[in-house]
Image 1 (cartoon, rainbow, N blue to C red):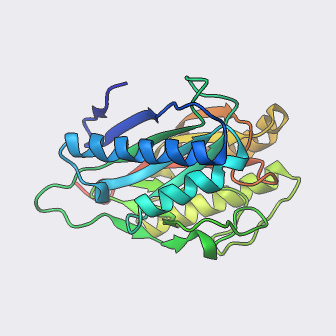
Image 2 (image 1 turned 90 degrees about the vertical axis):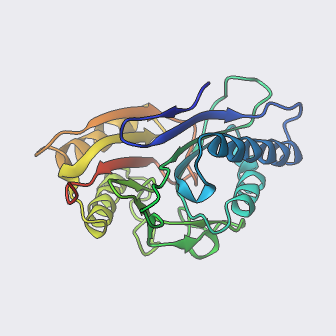
Length: 252
């Protein structure tokens, strides 16, 4: 799959995998190393830098592989602090692949400063669901570029780290949308500036209650969206997650 530089300046790097034999923690770590080698090479080939990276979406076939994959990611992206979404999926294009990475980067012009990383945090200081994660990685809640805003996937986790709505996907969606509104405001945007949302649920039965909340929040100005049912999210108790991408209206 080739990379694409969109008219808005976003570099889309999709479907980065490194199929290798074995379905173990060691194999997952080896695949992750190869995937991040490929990510660095593809970003460099596009004339960009790793610090231009804004958003990553991690797709892993087994929750047991999260720690080795994220451990590699934390080391390879130390100091970058992208926003992220982590998905547990039933399978990937290759039966030998246990990890796939999608990434979005915005190459900076000669007069552009660093992208702004809003609410930076370390994985060890922010729970995922009820528990803290054992791997060490650096993220942020939102990335603001000269024209765009990318949000971390938002769930029933408050921005202070408390998990809400256990067993209630609608309550989790309400918290997630509260987070989206707050983060967009911190980046100088509103829900009206959102141009795309992707909603993930872990059970088809959650589609109705979750989408009722999400659609209600976007009722004043509907947003293009995608809806996916996935095997799992960062923690078993997380029932839904929403990614939001916005274009800043405060710049010409």
